[in-house]
Every structure is written in C-alpha cells, then in structure tokens.
Length: 92
Image (tube, rainbow, N blue to C red; front, side, top):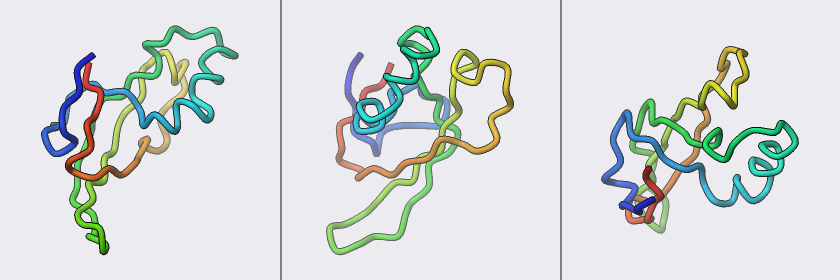
C-alpha cells in the first residue's frame, strides 16, 4: 500500500478509510462479522472541494463500501469524510 496526497486521489481509486475510523469501530466490526481486512477498502465515488477554514482547504470524499462489508444490503448512504489536500492517504 502506498500513500499519495489526498489532492491526487481520483474517482475510482481504492483507498483505506480514515485511520481514526478504522481504529474506533471498523476493525472491531470487521472482526465481529468475521470479514477479511479487504472488506474495509473503499472506492472513491466523488471528491468535492469543501468550504475552507482558517487552516486552509478541505476535500469532501464520498466512497462506496465493498460488497463484503455491505453483505447483500444496499448502501443507503455513501461513506463520507473530509481530508486536507496535503494529507498522505493510503491508496491500494
């Protein structure tokens, strides 16, 4: 897995979720549901420019989750998060 700047991510790229989310609940849910680590992977569906704040620009990233994670359920809402453009991001 290599890291690229968030500003270099494109629609269709497969990435890891934000590390904070993985730590707080995603890895635990993956284990409880007996899913492989690859179930955490996200595919970027959209990238938008967020409203800047006093520290600078934000990117709003919408993603689709894997079929393993969804387990046959429809994805009602995209998994969304924001990142600074210069944040290194794990890309698969």
